[in-house]
Each structure stands twice: as structure tokens, then as C-alpha cells.
Length: 377
Ligand SMILES: Cc1ncc(COP(=O)(O)O)c(C=O)c1O
Image 1 (cartoon, protein in one colour):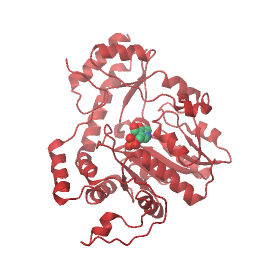
Image 2 (spheres, helix red, strand yellow; image 1 turned 60 degrees about the vertical axis):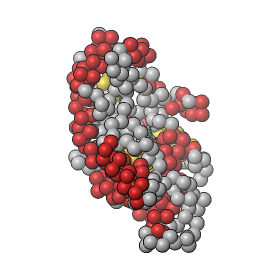
Image 3 (cartoon, helix red, strand yellow; image 1 turned 60 degrees about the horizontal axis):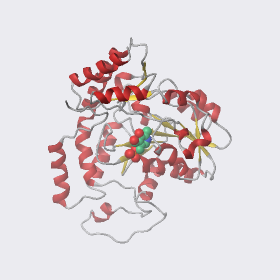
Image 4 (cartoon, protein in one colour; image 1 turned 180 degrees about the vertical axis):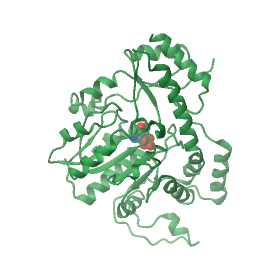
């Protein structure tokens, strides 16, 4: 019996190896070369005017918060509102910069609820970090309006959103989103090993991001070596970080990007099979998605009465589910906010993630459906 995992990346191995071989033969595996090629390919694919390749979404969120704080004169202790239904990188990026993470509740799509966000705004609020949960766009349009009305900056954590579109347009490019950060971590829709992209709407912020991610140095190594001579004379304007991406990861990303739309279409096909099979089961709650026909569907989740019991039942059949995510206000360091997002708290106790990836055959999907429906009938 073969195991059915909850998430499993599928690489186009020979093409990836060809791209990596080019890096090795050229003697260029660090920042530059394929990273520049991939930035250009990503800009073309998404429509973002700027894109800087970094080593993860986590560091991109940190850069986003840091640069907006620097550029807008925010003070330590100022607040950013985000969701408790996310990976811990999201609230941590606020704390890295000595700001306060305020949590607002989620809506039926498990994305930030604009009504609760508005209630959580006070005189210290400076920004919102919206997470496109499972690739969903949620009510991002309303959050954009709210941020404009209340003069707040907007960061989009698009870790799950590679390939999500609305009427053919990537929501991260919508006017009013100040910066969008993507993840190409090992199990994401566009998997590498670890890497990400930070896409500022504003050119100056993009420039600062490039410098801050490269230790504050004002010329990158690739640019310095381009003319054939390695120019050593540069200046250092900031205490920067080593957050840059590298050519080997970008080589993989370039290949995976070619297949992203096709693979997201297969994800939607699987989601439709699941949704059709579960919609009449009164023990199962399906999480909807606006613009479902263009959603990247990074993960597939349901709400069920007893999640632990279903996980155990699936495991008996060699099917492994998961949980995305625990309410972040249950973690020790965010306990101060526990109780502030009642819907998120309730729903997070019932969430279960079912297998969704490119290795699943239709028979695998049927098997998952049968085990779930038989157990919860
Ligand atoms: C919503 C969300 N934000 C941020 C991250 C962090 O991404 P990375 O692993 O690229 O740092 C993840 C990764 O799992 C995520 O799911």
C-alpha cells in the first residue's frame, strides 16, 4: 500500500538539473545570474513592476516591515494588524522590528475579516498584513479600501498565492498593496528548496530591499563582476542582512514556473472532486474561495467535528492529513491576544488539511474521499 502524503512537491527533475548544471559550469551559484533571470520571469508572469529574489518569505516579511517602518517614521511599539490563522513567520515579522502584533478575526474564507480589522485599529496602528490563506484572495479588496481610508500600509503575505489570479490579474499587483511577499519553500506551489520573492510597488523601497538583503552594501556582487572585473569599491549604508537568494534555487524556480499554471489547474480539479464529494456530508464544513476558478489552492482544508479522530482514521489507511494552522494566539508568546479572535479560535480547532499535490492520482483522491465520507457518515 503506498502512502498518501498531505503535501509533496513534484520537480521536473531533468530540466532542473540542466538549469543547475549551467550554474555549476558557469561557476556562478550565488546571487545573480539565474536569480536575475528568475526575477525577470516572475515580473513578466505576475505583472509586478519590481521583484527581488530572497532566501524565504519569512525574511521578505521582515524586510517589508522594516522598510515601511524606516520610510514612514514608525516608532517602536506601533501596531500592525494581522491574522491568527497563519504560519508563525507572519506575526514574528512584526516583532522583529519591535512593533506590536494585534490580531483580528478571520472570515468564512479564513482570511482577515475587514469588519474586525476596522474594530482593531487605534491611533498606534500603522499597517495590516493580509495572508492569502490557501491561495485565497478573501476580501482583500475591502482591506485595501480600509487601509486607504485609515491611512495604513498594506503588506500581502502571498506565501500560498503563487499563481492566484482574479480576472487574470495577480492580486499582489492591485493598487493599494504596498508590498507582496511570495514563498518558494520546499512544499509550496512553486517549490525550490527555500526561497522567496519580495515585490514592492515602489521603486525606492525595492532598491532599499536589495541593499538591506545584501548586508547594506550598495552594489551587488553580480553587478560588480558583470564587466569582467570584480569591482571592490562599494559603500555600506545600513546594518543589513544576508537575505539574498541564490542561483541554484533560482535555476529550479525557473523550471517550476513554466508548469505553475498547469499544476494549479490540476489542484483546482482535485479541489472540485473533494468539494463535490463532501458537499452533502453534514459533518463536514467546506471552506469556500472567492474566484475559486483562479485560486492557487496551496492546501485543501475542511472543518470536522473531531479532527484528531479523523487524522488517526486516515493514518490507518496510510493517508496523512495535516493542520494549517493552530490559532497563533495559543502560542506562549502571543498568548496576550488569546480570546481576541473568537471565530478563528473556534474554527482552528476543527481544521484538517487533506492531501493536495501533483503526485495524487484520481484513485488516490477517490480513496481519501471514501475514507473521510465513510468515517464521517
Ligand atoms: C502563510 C505563510 N507565511 C509565511 C511562510 C514562510 O515562508 P518561508 O518558509 O518561505 O519563509 C509560510 C510558510 O509555510 C506560510 O505558510
